[in-house]
Amino acid sequence: MNKKIHAIIFLTLFISGFFMLIYPNLKQQYGQAQIEQTIVSFQEEEKQYSQLYEQMQAYNEQIYLNHQSGLKDAWSFEHHDFYFSELNTDQDMIGYITIPKMNIELPLYIGATVDNMNKGASVLGQTSMPIGGMNTNCVIAAHRGMYTSAMFRDIELLKAGDVIVIHNPWQQLEYEVIKAIAIEPNDIDAIKILEGQDLITLMTCHPYPESYQRYVVYAQRKGAEKTEVPFAGVSYVSSQNQLQIERSLNQIGTIFFLVVFAILVIQFIMKRLHTNK
Image 1 (cartoon, helix red, strand yellow):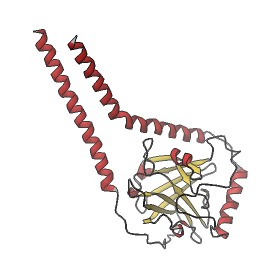
Image 2: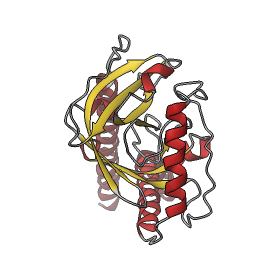
Image 3: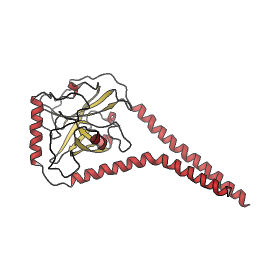
Image 4: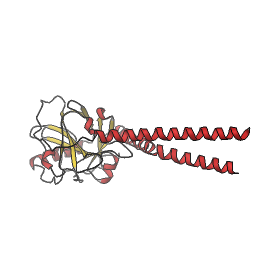
């Protein structure tokens, strides 16, 4: 009876430990599968959404002429001015963003609501819609990593010349990174439209895993004449070491668990062999 109890305890501890070890990876794989399915569903849509495109063009022109007067904060602006009746996919979804250097592809939503931010990347209200054009700057925010997806966790990998691709219902827009800085959360000037430019700006919390600054990456429409972004930002500390430490600890934890498990298995087998003699 004692042997059976020991075996049950051993198996229970092993299964519990193994599940705790792999749960974060399973959660992220499941989340990534959901993201991929959302993008596939969007790609299967065949409508051209002509009316929505015209609304977005008008909106972009309006906020440019109004100097983005409704922009209050460099992160928290959630609302948008569009009615998405033409879209049959996920509510508020207008496309997806691909960043090869970061090895991510995320759904792109209009409005940085809590729900949208949990599902993918979001276009901040009072910044340009993701359709390109002169006098536009589409500011795209995402979390600095979640259990379900890396999101913008590795944004510091982006360097000048790296490509960012925006996929909307009408076209594929390619941008090249030109600059990366850190800013204060209330520095709205650093994310505004630049005269005569076609830009996108990626933004996330900094440093990882805290959020007292914002890390921003400016990218210019591919093929355009190079421009100078007139913002120096603030001094900041890179999060690369912290991210590497986190990866190393995860690896060490995995190795430690496997070693302990191997020892326990060997001890269990040795006891059984000794008992059977």
